[in-house]
Image 1: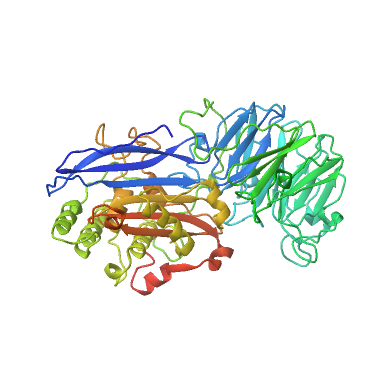
Image 2: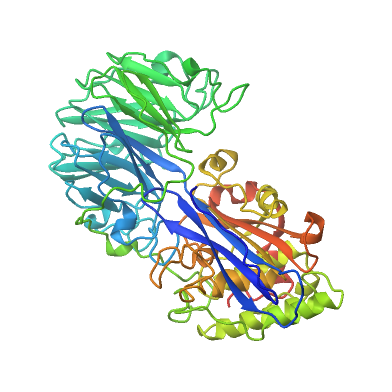
Length: 621
């Protein structure tokens, strides 16, 4: 990645190496390495290193072609933009001052759709709550908030989340479409009806949709549009003509005797509007009308999401070559598949390269005021003012648990001894007090809990006292993922491809530390992750007091609430002696993510917040 890190050999001090998040133009974060030192009370000939690492990743949401067909843009759920070929980079949600799906100023909801303007010098992003973000020459014409709708919650919420958008031919307007078939028109985009026009009653009621709407495709002159459902159903409005649906090809939707092999996730029309393509999550393309069959992932040797040669991740979106003789598909991991005349201009990299972002011009994006994420949950005490903000500076631990823990190990104790953990917990409580937070109310059996359960409890103590939704539980599959990092003294192996192995719809946030105890790891993640001055800053990504790389670990713990989703977590802790290291340290790792509430009970948990509360943890503070 072009970054190098190293140890600082300076006994009787221990070297401290931290990695933090460096925000870039894309949907991922880059890792940076730095080093500094802190004094310990015990002189030993071999330095002992406390290390932490942090990683975050978000899945891809959409792809859109440039007007020439010689490039395309790929958008991630956090608002990151990746440009290829002649498609220009005109900014992303980070250039608007937002911090993705976590951090100090997060999006209220993930990005779900993208559209380019007619000249190719601008584009729009739309979020699940109906917020619209404009960049370059694309103008803002309104959002669902303009209609008085209050996003996914509040006094007047959407009946169903927004799932996509489409531009008018002139670029002077756009449509948004919701999962229930509701259509919202802005600028010169005209309203021609919705699924309610057909007497369908959304996603429930007397005559509901058989499957939610997933895409909207306008006709070339903007005189109509098609809505496409996950079961392959197609609804035509205005001058859009019906050329068939997957039912026309003998499929029976998502069930029945001949079901689709995967949900439909995207659609696009031919340039003259006399046909269209649909694509499923497994990469199967269905063509209708004059739309030519240019192949799908099977023609490239892939066997869908299973079989002998599966896709690395599900397909999430498609866009057409303006010539009408090709198209691109994109997976949630950022892999782009080209067909027909559509050229291959590259995939989203696993990690962006430093400095790769093009100059970012000033834009006039209007962010709806309702995009502020609430910071309190039912039954919890309101958080003290400023408690979600990063400390103004690193806070020295009091008591100095480095010294007491080192003394314990010298006396023959292993890492995470009760006395060491108690000292680090005391330091956490004193640091919390500086932000107006109360002393943690831990389960009565906290010091007897396995280390991963202790990490889980401490993460939730940090969250609930600040008004955030508690992490529901430790997911076994995420514990295994964290253990891969812990056992390798490295970050858990998080990448966008990880999204194909679980229902991690919102993102994955990973921390790693080598420290004296679980509470020690938490302390460094929460209170020792900022700028400490030239030559004395733990985190090389934190290159100045205002650098975006500062406090990356803390942000990964305090991930923001998103309506309809609940945080879950994985954790691992391994004594370094079993990894060939010093017995006074443990290798700790955490992975946080959020799953939809409907999927929450389908996961397998090793420990839950309900168990911690039953043992004495306070769910309110």
